[in-house]
Length: 120
Image (cartoon, rainbow, N blue to C red; front, side, top):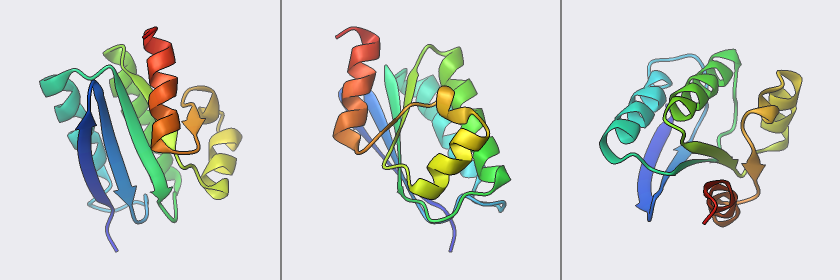
């Protein structure tokens, strides 16, 4: 099953809902391409990655999350992960990526984190 990426915009926040595995394969790199395009065309204040339906993340998936963080940071765009599973949380903590990418239990909470970072 390939990684499926759905996008929606809510105000000044772009929400990416990810479904399926974030593992090495041809569909994984599509995430970075979609994020790059979104940042270039709409310049959102924040990005929410809803990972609640991501079943598996390998080192390539963590690498892709790091790329997404870098793309967002270069544009002063807040990034928040929503719906992080216990397994993904463990991987983020092990690699210390949890210090770079805050998480929230759901999309609504993630948008509040972004709003607080933007000072609105």
